[in-house]
Image 1 (tube, rainbow, N blue to C red):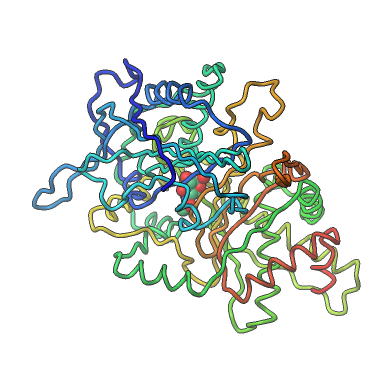
Image 2 (image 1 turned 180 degrees about the vertical axis):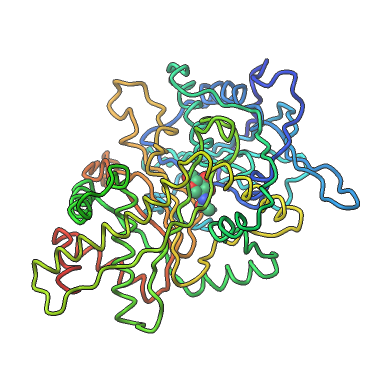
Length: 505
Ligand SMILES: *[C@@H]1O[C@H](CO)[C@@H](O)[C@H](O)[C@H]1NC(C)=O
């Protein structure tokens, strides 16, 4: 048994919620009660435990719900009791383990399954949290004595908040630890927002509900769980790394493929728009070779963070603020018969632009305030119904034609592991690697790349390969026979400046 130390860390008093006893959940926060967000930071050196405990205590004081407990009011005859967090300024468990065996931390990709995290975390018993005295955050440090690295992990109950808030919280800890200026970070807002009922106009329901099929078609667990297990059996994970140079090339090609006179807002393609478009093209090409009868992907569902909308979600609202929005389906142009190499290249660029623009069009829709508030009213109502009836949101693809993506490309996860003073040689986020969980079928998640660490031999310090700095890593599950081809094909294509895909079109 490895030697293990345990601490309980409470918020420094008074907290930012002084005088408040409970925070009642709006329906959107109940949607993720079954999810635990796992995070692991591989740090180049050790962390001072006394300083860490003080830093965590200060961060809990800014985020008191993290030191709270998840509770539920009793049911009444016709409705299930609301969920709430009781602010008890309780203890957050922090454990420290010494590991004298591990020669190399085994997790490679950013996004991995829960099983791969198991040896490194102090787990939250997710099915036994409500109305129990269970902390909603658990922290573990594992000191790898053989490599000098530290594995810092958190288990974070998703009911507390989404990636944005989890990232902000861990960043506060790192700032307090370093003594950095927290006034540079947005202060969390602990008031929840309760949305009105959706309009009763049936035409509006007909327009909006198909945009949120994951909730419209929410399933009882008896149906969802077997479907999810079956999906895992049928699919394999893929991890695709795009270097800054790859991204630049693909962006250039997509922009070259935009039709003349494209509106400025539509021409502002984001990096995920283009990368997702490229992966769909490759996916569809492979599918047409191995299973020509199956429908190709022609519709993208985007997970959009709607923070920063006054009245709907302030930027640092403590909680969950993501919506799934179905973009308009796209139709790819036809390749002219007997097209030569130059025409194939133009065709590839046009296809890339067509898909990326359909994604952009969906995102732009949600930027319209009127559209967004109506969307959220329906969304909120479906979350309420799902909670009342005990249904799970359906995160599996609604049909062969759909793919979902949830991009964290704007979230710098690694800054939560930045514990070294500026000026020390390994300071900053370049020498921190980050990993997290939740990888689903045709549910693309995109993260900022980790740099590669090449461990040293015989106790010598290793070396860093920072060529991926500024790159992105995409991960999802897809049918096993497609998965193998997809990864090798994209690798090959990238080596040839993405020219292989169109020479084969
Ligand atoms: C989507 O990404 C956000 C931010 O990283 C995260 O909080 C959320 O859990 C993700 N959703 C899923 C289903 O992976």
